Image (tube, rainbow, N blue to C red; front, side, top):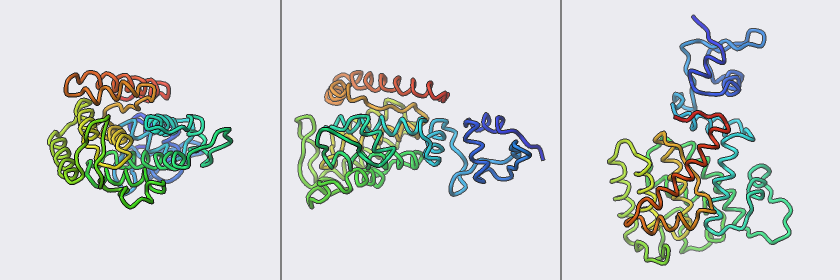
Length: 296
């Protein structure tokens, strides 16, 4: 049997050498053994995940999964968790700073603050980290009503809203609501509208960047939940980009007004929303370049 080096295996599976050494040390690469300080890896072995599923060919997803499992600080997973959670929550009115968000992620504490802090902001920040973990774990799974509801349940669990019977955490709204000052889909039609949206979306075997944005706009217009629609919708976009080997993106809270305009004007000028998302995608590409992740 021929054996290959860590660097050869890393190149083959598009991983960092540090990650490969970690897998060798934790027994995730079958047949790998040490000679002195050098790992020898069987040429025909495959890197396996839980359930013996082969590793994804999505380079970014591989990095996110590996760093999540390793609890690695200072990498793309760490940065994505903080940037995504901070910006998405700020768009919806959270007062937590980026530094406070980082502190919660790294230490599970809020740190000292001169101003009072809303407890729901803290809970939803912690919950959003769990939502990101879920979309990484289930990136390649088909988008379903069940997964959408699971994201909402994770996001809103433990908040003051979750103690209100009418709020219906993890399920569709019971009371009518608005989006951008306009009437949203009435509660009794939400389930049918979401099913129709998913059916039309999944008719396309390979989703494009534009398909994912269009799904998001329609999802937000339906506004299926009492609250949390924007954050759940943006989590879905990130997941679907990973699922279709598209560079994902994080809507920056400084672009909030452009983002809202794009959602409102979609039926007239789709370029408003597309351009905003492309700008934020460029920002995420810059992060990938910094972390030397060659996403193609």
